[in-house]
Amino acid sequence: MKKHYHLYNETLPIEADLDDLKELLSQKKQLLENYEEISCDLDDEMYISRGNGFCTTKWAPDVIDDKIEELKRQIAEIEGWIKDSF
Image (cartoon, rainbow, N blue to C red; front, side):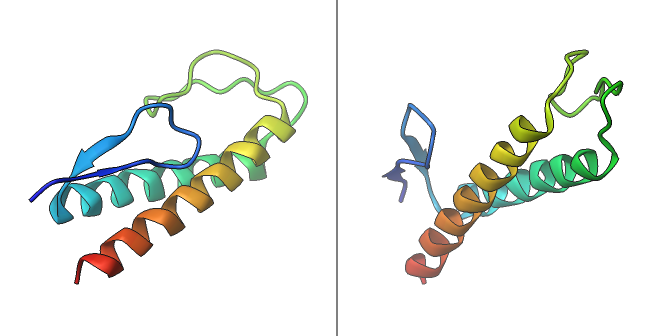
């Protein structure tokens, strides 16, 4: 049975069951990994262009750091929802 969830810093609620939450968790963890990798390699002249949602836009380190913190908070929320489902 699907339930409504409101994920931190997302405007629209999501409707998900346990399998959907596990898939969402996997996606968010992959995004976090991508941002953390970029954060380690980012310099003043670097532009990010990848097939993972980034475009040819220059990303400032503070923007990347904020996104990392947002993803960590979302991952913790989803893990809590999964735990509560059992």
